[in-house]
Amino acid sequence: MNDEVERLLAAREPRIADLGRQLCALVLHVYPDAVVTVDNGYIGFGSSRGYKGLVFVVGPHSKHVTLGLSGGVGLPDPAGLMEGTGKVHRHIKIRQPCDLEQPELRELMTAALNRQR
Image 1 (cartoon, rainbow, N blue to C red):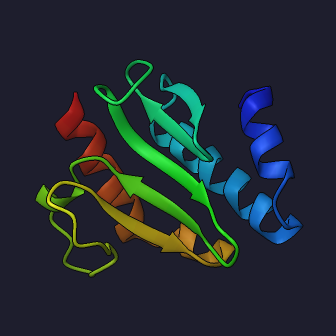
Image 2: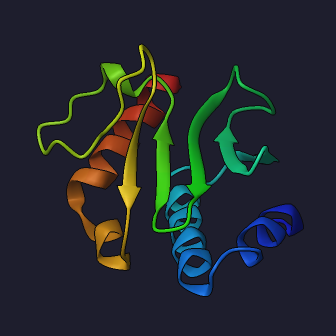
């Protein structure tokens, strides 16, 4: 990760900062060539800077960290992990480290990345 990401996460409660780091590491494991940007309190992962190539967004909040999926509304989600009511995007709330171990989470992430490519 980069200094901007670390500054953003370091400003959060230690539990949320650690969870954010773990989620970012998972995103980079799934999408190792992602361009990482920080904007408006969120960490973006995409094929380029800016909105157009965006695939994932990590957002640290007070009680959880969200994983935003660009275009998530069109992804299959049989486990019902995604939340949101927007026309395009969906998110998943990560509340504890074991949430990152769900195979359905990785399946959604892989589907989002494959659709973007």
